[in-house]
Length: 186
Image 1: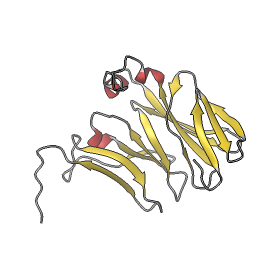
Image 2: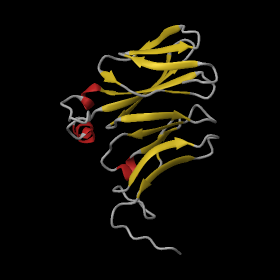
Image 3: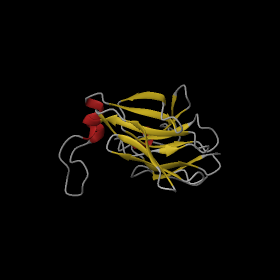
């Protein structure tokens, strides 16, 4: 949602849509038939919309009674070498201005930096080693892992709900260290 400009962006089937406060709607773009998504994020200036897509095969299969897939999505993504794509669209024209492939990842929760729309925070959703593989930053040239093993951090740690500080000065998240880790105060 772009609250400053009164525009809501949403996905309807494969179409990326926008509607304003007057009820005027339009289709910005269409996603590939063999990919799926569930998230969008608009840049602070309202000029760009980021929509991550994933090879649809990642979520094929039966679901459990709770609505979640009854298999390990990350294992399937790794085994079958499935990919996600960071897609950025111009909100005025609907033209796709970036499509960055990220192999062996199910990407969700994309977020432009509030300061610089060339910086996109994203995650590898439900990854098996979320202590180090969940949080990433795309700077327009490279993908930067934001949390590495070492200094008390482990791939078995749990991290979640990463987001930019409102002013873009930092990235915050919550989580916990792996069970059994003993910490001491210095």
